Amino acid sequence: MIPELKEDVTHGTKQYPYDQYYLRDIPHAFQIPVHWHEEMEIIYIKEGTLHVRIEGRIMRARRMICFL
Image (cartoon, rainbow, N blue to C red; front, side):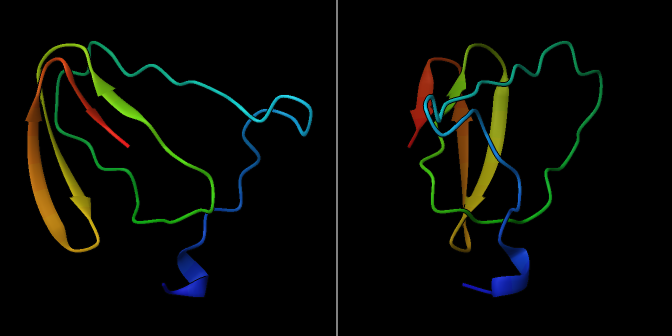
């Protein structure tokens, strides 16, 4: 892992280290910058399609799929 790509964002609090983010009604493609972190990330696709690159592998997922 490249140290410079480590995400330096606090999600939640020390007592409750959890946060959730909703992306919806996005009319165009977008990218989240390449990053890594020690915390687990859960991506759940409620509807639509998502392309995810994890450790160099590109995966395509449709609704009702979850990445851990």
